[in-house]
Length: 512
Figure 1 (cartoon, one colour):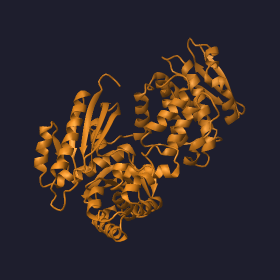
Figure 2: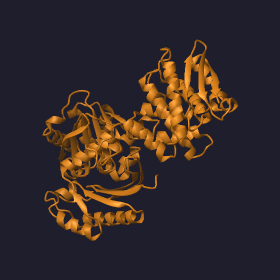
Figure 3: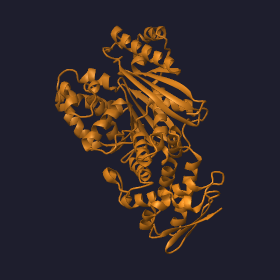
Figure 4: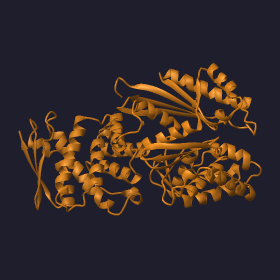
């Protein structure tokens, strides 16, 4: 990170868990999340109809807050701390806030609309969604928000938290009785019916936020044998969620975590109620799939700080920023990377102009992204840097890119210097024709990387490209670098891939 980097610790005290997110960032330039800590506090446990926080629950929460404060102080992070539904609803909230202050943490209690808006900021900046419904299922409440044209329109907090509903409807018998499940389903439906603006019709976009949603995504990924260990951007089908709810209803709480791979043991008792809220919201909203967002309220607070003073605090071009941010985090934002991207696009445009290779705007953007990122693998090791780059991309993610696009960008980097490009385990993420797209992208990146590595840093590649019936003629200013240096680069050592893919040999001409 640049020397001017700052650290911010964001504490989110929910009804079920207390969480700390520590971000290191240079405003408007780059960021990374350096720590995520969580403690189960069950602040709303035992509140009952009187909405009174118990002494035990407050003690658990204050202990977590004190631990988080000490962590932030040790790591030089400024603290922003907020509390949500349990504190908001509690009649003894002032007493609890005083205990938190005594532990060194000043909590701001968010309104339901504030909470919904922060979750929406996370979705807009984390997924790039501009229109649709955002659902955040917490322990004490669920927030529903409406987005339109990249702006938060409205939001509401509903008493549909997973802890709250489990205590009120599903604690009478284990496994859950049919009559209790039916009553809960009716209660959820009646509550959602008070939000008529969430009904967008069939095919609506619904994004999900929060621990319940992330847990459901993890369960479904494992059940499907999904090739990416990445919940962010995952799409959960409503039909699969309905089947999971049926499995959970038949299992006693004590057996759920063992019988359902991916289910955290500390969510085993509340996951069914949360899943029923998600399924009901999908039906009401008209969504066949739930778009999963890893980010939530904490990230929403961070984005507001990072993008200050922008209003609304939303990235103008999320996809571009995601690529550059990942490059900056791993030392890949270099002049050579810029030259590689420039050379790749010049070659791409020359071949695209022939109209023969199925190269469009999407492929151009994927190639640009791969060119910017192909060198980040050196942060792990220079040997096999393409494989390391692919690993970093697939496990870090690129907010704004689909999982299919993520796989294509990562695999283009993977085969940027050697190997036969193939989709492998990622084939069922991809679309028809991607098995042919990948070799074309990899071949272009190989040549571009060679051109960039042999160009004079001050002058850039200075490329001129001419495509003929049997060759691609490339002229560049190599400065003090000789033709021999260029021809020893991966672009020529591996030029058989380019010739095989495009049916043309590369002819090089350099100008001293």
